[in-house]
Image (tube, rainbow, N blue to C red):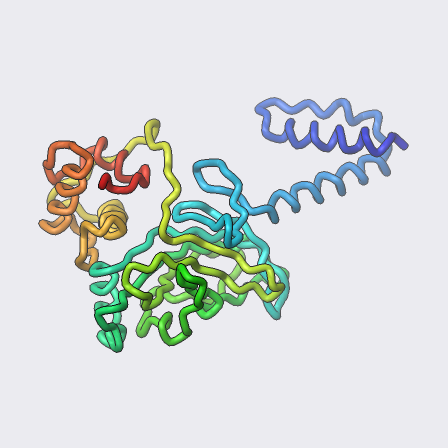
Amino acid sequence: MKSRQMIVFVTVLVLLCSIAEAINFSFLDDFTEAELQELRMEIDDRLTEMKKNPSGGDDGEPVAATRSDPVLVGQTLLCKIEDYSGDSLISMEMVCTIRGAGAKALVKSFSRTNLSFLDKGSEWFLVMVRIEVLEADNEKVNLYDNAFHFVSKDGAEYGYSDGHIWDNPAEIKPLYVGSTLDAWIGCKVKTGDDPLITYENRDGDNLWFNPNVRVLKDTSAMAFKPLASKDSGRGVTELQYRLMEYGLLTVVPSGTYDKDTASAVKNFQKAFGAEGTGTADEETLRLLYTGKPLPR
């Protein structure tokens, strides 16, 4: 049998060839059946390990998902989670984060009960989380919002009652393989606090997220459809949520490019030194979706 070093070498070569346009596997003709089986097992192990390793977003940087190196807004985390039904491979991404007046307007639209006990020293912090189930031992993964915990900047964990959203229209729930869910998680935090979020995995290897920082994205080669007054649809809704994240829009997104949206876009343009037209042209959208913070 060929040496272990040769098996590893060929494994790497096959993995590289798998992403090429033209693939020639004729070099495998000299391998015995046993050697090919070992090679297949090696490749399967490597691919499985690649899936298990956390991966970054559009910046291409790896995500450790630890407290010292948490996942940022806009980064996609591939992770293995464990529950009583078995192991699952899922992807998680914080799509947007909203706090202050905008978050207050949203939770009020869910239920006025969400404003109970919200005093001058606290505010709602909402995070839209996108979850996709890629693999599961039993075709299903049991996910619940109480697995996510908000941890204050000084290290104190907020209580469950602080994080319960009454009449949540997009709550986390069990999912089957191949399904994707956008869900709200949230917490009543101290005003101005920059909390982290931890996902409590049953195997004890918790995952950490930083909802206060968005990963920067290179949009220079991306094309955007301009949006203007009276336009409607998903593109407008996504624009409105992003404006809420910046704190420029503090009303519940309508899905229609209304006066509030135009005013928020105008303020965004002025903040970056551009002409405040109030129309989301391609240049404005390209800048908006880079995730750059507003200039101070």
